[in-house]
Image (tube, rainbow, N blue to C red; front, top):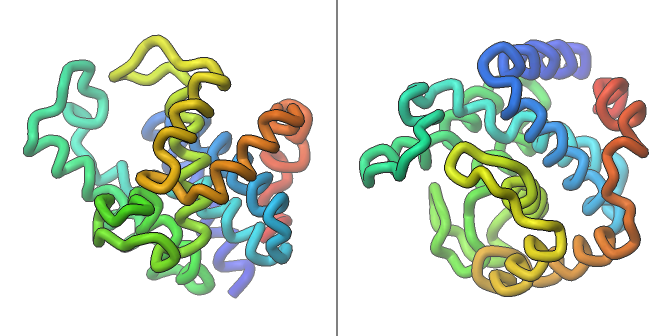
Amino acid sequence: MRSTLIYAARVLVRVQESRFKSACLHSQRVAFYALLLARELGLDEKYQKRVYLAGLLHDIGKIGIPDFILFKRGKLTAEEWEEIKRHPVFSYEILSTIPGMKEISLMVLHHHERYDGTGYPVGLTAQDIPLGARILAVADSFDAMTTERIYRPFPLSREEALKEMHCCAGGQFDPLLVEVFSRLIGRGETDLSLYEQEFTTNFYSKI
């Protein structure tokens, strides 16, 4: 089962790379932030590995979204936004069929849920949202805010992004996770280049 999971992970990461390189780099950073957060929370190593892999594959479902929507520079229509919101379900449908990825697929399915219950695709609240999904939500949003995006060419600074996340704590994000992530940023431990060999080159050995 482990070899099947590793092989599937490799294939899916390559699929992401071939479809959209920038999204693959985003996923690597999300996986990195998520793993550091899981470590800081003292979660066991097995769970850390699953969170890391969920970060790498959290957007795999976007391969099912039409390019004209996914790469649109202008404002999305209501219909286009509804299509975008389907990507966690697509990701779940892909990952849940792979032996050993059930827990990972649930993290991915729910990473756009909001702590106050206004997220998607289900509308789960607070502790009903899987911990891994709540971790991904923090990591995903931080990277989205601090990097250039099609819809926002001017990224926020890390300080600005953290301020925004604190404002959204209890609404969009788990307040505890925002506090813990802020500590990591404050200690300067979120520079991917310091961990590149460990977290990107050899990640398959962590599964």
